[in-house]
Image (tube, rainbow, N blue to C red; front, side):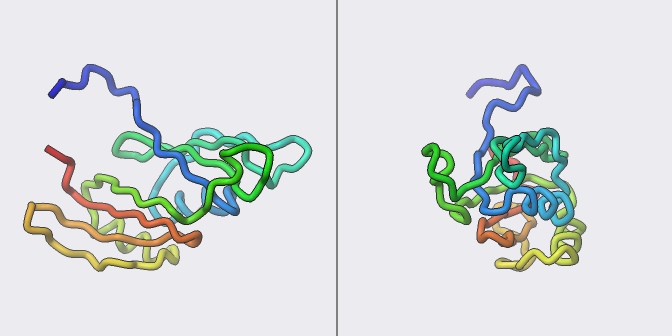
Length: 136
């Protein structure tokens, strides 16, 4: 195993959303992501070509609009992702997510391997799991 020598994010999960702008707002409100870039089409601002959001604890996601036939990326199905994110205070994040309307699909629980966390679905059906387990 190698020891990381950089804080640069080298893995970016990429998602496809039917309503990318609404999802950017939801991910900010419900989970605490920070929008760092959003590029829409000039001729149709409802189509997001590329967006980036940072996770406050490190890392981030990229996404764009789906439902268009101009590229393989625009044809990806929405709602098929499952992600795990490390957080220091899953109880506070659970309350925030619930208040913002996230559908809780796995209640807060303590795991045998020492993690505490929960899982929620976003409005487009993607599953987001949050917990204190940061890997080996």
